[in-house]
Length: 176
Image (cartoon, rainbow, N blue to C red):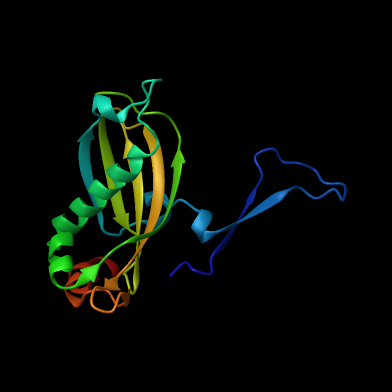
């Protein structure tokens, strides 16, 4: 859906170049971290997670690598809330590896924070599925945003395949 989208945004520093033009940056969609503001009514699910002490670094911040695990929990629970589980897909011979992850860390989360991970399926999947995430603390303050792309893989051939029909039927009401 967004493979060819290019977003042009003025630089924060509004640099004037020697020609007098204001500096602009070009972002491909892979550099763009979407939020509900951009995508409106799509399938979303919220999952609450409590930050454990072991997930923090010496500064007391949630270690940046742990957020990928939080996103995975959000993704798994979003699919489960639809009535589809990773386990079921694996039993049906479909694997779903992560192709890419793009995250923006706005502010740190801390030990014992109760985080809400909002997971949104960006578009009806084909061979790939994209999930957008927002991580917020108990006060609703945005901590992190991310976008992941996963690929449906046929376990028997180890090649990409179409999304399972059962999943497409469950998602159809949100993208019709």
